[in-house]
Image (cartoon, rainbow, N blue to C red; front, side):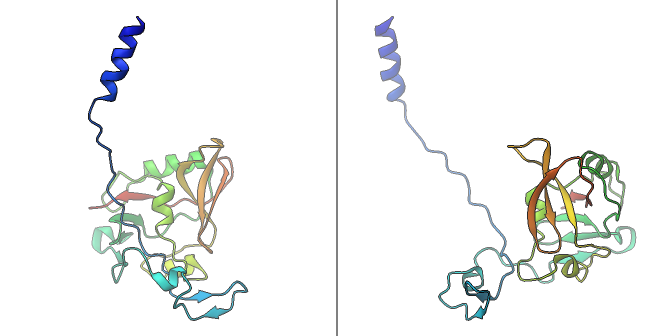
Length: 191
């Protein structure tokens, strides 16, 4: 038996090894164009290494968001991600489970495949350069945004009784108990 084990180990070690490399992901720019020192004072960006200096990532299309017309007037398409968002999110605050159900039950703009966005999709809307993300989004074809937390569909792996959310005033990402009442904003995969 020992000899069989040794033969298997040698045979496996002689198999060709091909590393698997994932394709790089295109990450969006953060939106930051200004820089500051450790005290928060605005400084020239050149050489700081901050996002406003590098502006790394894929540039946003201009305009980034397109409000629908006709039958899709209540929806806004993000030309960067291809996602379609509800143009005016529900003002009611609900638990995470209710947010999942309400998003899945939605029929809007001729579509019935709405869902709660995952944390990456929700966070893709953040703009670090703006002091109030909700106010910024309300100038981009959306309306009725409030600067509160919005649920994502993403559960916190370490604490499954909590889910991730984005605070739409300062673009902060937090996790909250799924029993907490917060806003939700349905999305669907666009074209």
